[in-house]
Image (cartoon, rainbow, N blue to C red; front, side, top):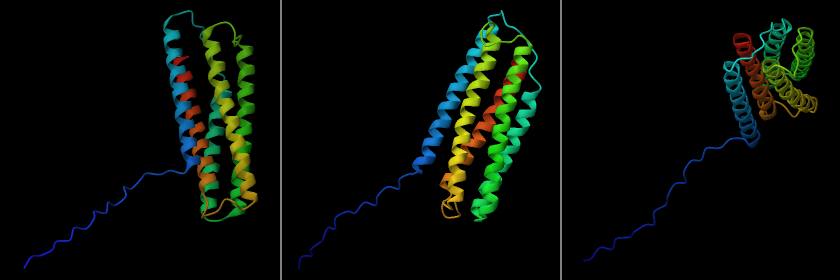
Length: 196
């Protein structure tokens, strides 16, 4: 008697793929590119400063106050995220609005800081130390404006009830970008304060 052996075709289990929401992926790619930009700029700052002919000036005190304002805005942004997780739509809208207001206040304070720099005869054109100060703060302000635009879209979505416990992507993207901008400013402020 001969036995017949049946050979079954091998069925391979599909490999588990890592996936990320495309919007979150874009935000993280944007964050990485901004980190690379500011890393290159801070390196250039240190190299140029070491060459000499460097004007030393007092950092405007309002930059310290604006740092506190931005940190408070991070707290209100996190408050918005927690409200979204609980479907507390009124608190969500309020918290996003507060974050937006603090972001605007930060920009106004930056402008006042630039006026303080001009009062100290620190200009964009002239000594490289002043140029770097305006470029750093100006680029951060530009990115903060983009963050305010993201906040406006989130606020509109909150009013349309598109942000809720089962759909947190938009508020997570908003929160990630806003916290990053806050961390970036704290880094820049500390860097400029220490190396000025």
